Image (cartoon, rainbow, N blue to C red; front, top):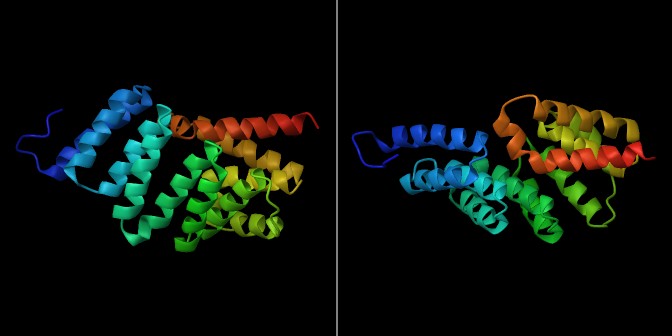
Length: 211
C-alpha cells in the first residue's frame, strides 16, 4: 500500500494497521513486519506502531529487532504508557531467558506502573524465581494481583507461575489452565502474540502433572 495519496497520515496508519493484522493473523510475519515499518515511518502513534513492529519481529524470531522497537516505544510514548512498554520488553527478554535484562526492564515497569503495578511486580517475581533468586512475599504478591483487574487475562499467566513457585499447586493449575483456554479460544492474533507464554504455561502444567 502506498504512503502517498490524498489520505491523511492518521487514516493511512489505520488502514495499514488493518493490513498488518491480516498478515499477522495469517502468520505472514515478514509482510507484517514490512507494513509495521511503514506505519512507524508515518509517525502517527509512534509507540503503538513500534509495539506492532516488535510483535512481528518477535514472531519471526528476531529478538534484537523486537527489543529495538520496544526501547523506542518506551522512549517515544507518553508517560501513561511507559510502564506498559517496559513490561512488554521485559516479557520478550523473559521468554528469551535473558533474565538479567528482563529484571532490569520489569523493574522499570514496576517503578512507572500505577493501576497495573501488581502485574509488573508479579512478573518481576516470576523472572527472579526462574533465574534462581530467592523471592520473599510471593503469597502477598499473588493475593494483590488476584484482587485487581490486571489479574485477569495475561495476569492469569503471572499468577499461575507465581503460585507454582510458591508450591500452591491447585491454584497454579487453575490459573494456567484458564490462561491457556482464554488465550487460545479468541482471535488468532492473540494466540500468536502469546505463543511463548502459552508454551511456558503448558510446560509448567506438564511439570505439575508429573508430581
